[in-house]
Every structure is written in C-alpha cells, then in structure tokens.
Length: 63
Image 1 (tube, rainbow, N blue to C red):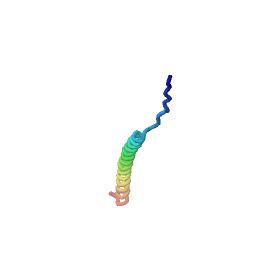
Image 2: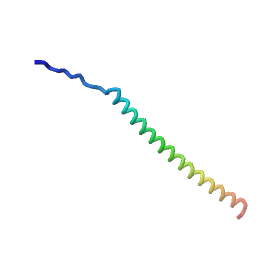
Image 3: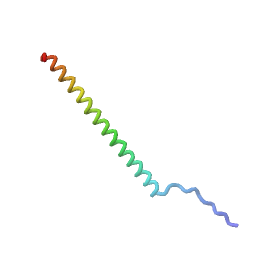
Image 4: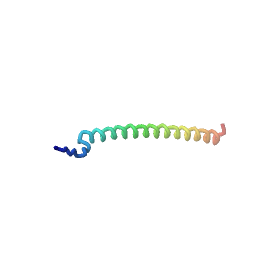
C-alpha cells in the first residue's frame, strides 16, 4: 500500500504576481479618487474665499 503525502501548496509565482497587480490597480483607483475629491473640495474653498473677499471689498468701498 503506497500512501501519497501531498505537501501543502503555497502560492505560485504567477498567482503572487497576479495578486500584487490587482492590489496595485485598486490602490491606483483609490488614490485617483482621493486626488479628484481633494481638488474639487479645494476649488470649492477657493470659490468661497473669493466670494468672501468680494463682499469685504464691496463693504470697504461702500457699494
């Protein structure tokens, strides 16, 4: 009677590279979304400050 001892199989190099590639793609999407949200919120803040500065200037001039 022969018994076959099968060693537990780890990840092959191809599987490991595939997992790393998927993680890199997800990180790329995530950082892109963060940058887009940051730039749009920054633009909103700039618009808010510009509107405030215009109001202050109008009040200083006396319009």
